[in-house]
Length: 247
Image (tube, rainbow, N blue to C red; front, side, top):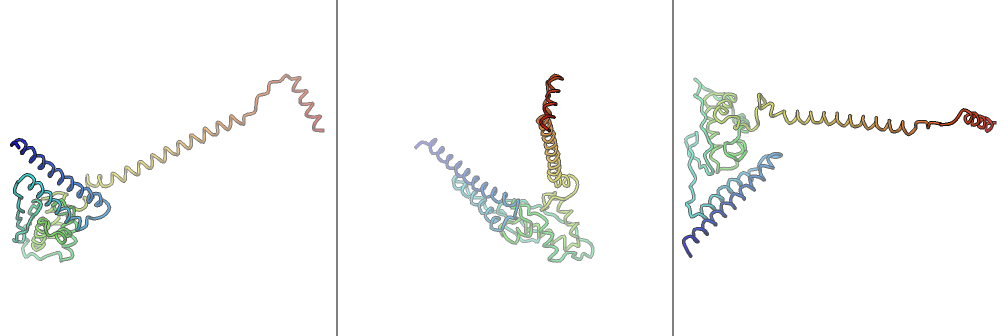
């Protein structure tokens, strides 16, 4: 077999493996995305997506005879290393500690805060759920470390949230803020739906009014007295005959 044939076959296998991996990953992501509109993604879904991403990368590397890339290590805010399996989406967020700092948030309040911010990785889970259900993700533990550091520095939840949005933007939020352009985007679908309902009701009332008017006109034509074409002599004889019949 020629070198050209060998290359073509290897190239074909590489492309086939890459395509199969992409299709499988797309199917899993699409399924979970469609369910996320009505229900939160479960930890099983989360783990499945991460596993599929790793399996797809391994399949493509095997088909192309390329070495499998080893997981990178992302240092967490607390100083310990965590394994980042799917990519580095984490950005450090810190605020200088306040003089004589005293934590303003307890454990429960920290949990509630972390449920309101999204993990930077593509899992669509909040930070608390991600870090407590899928231990292969290194992003949510790093964000958790930043939150703890700022809480220890005496900062409030609002101050920490402002710092988070300053680094990640509104993408860090689990729900868009109901202000400014986001407020318009939030209420626009409901306003459009209400306007459409009003217009539809007006159109239906107009159609009903027009149909009733047309029906009235048709009925008037149907019951209109017939025109009589007779001479005065004929009318006199007719009236005389009617008087005779009534006796």
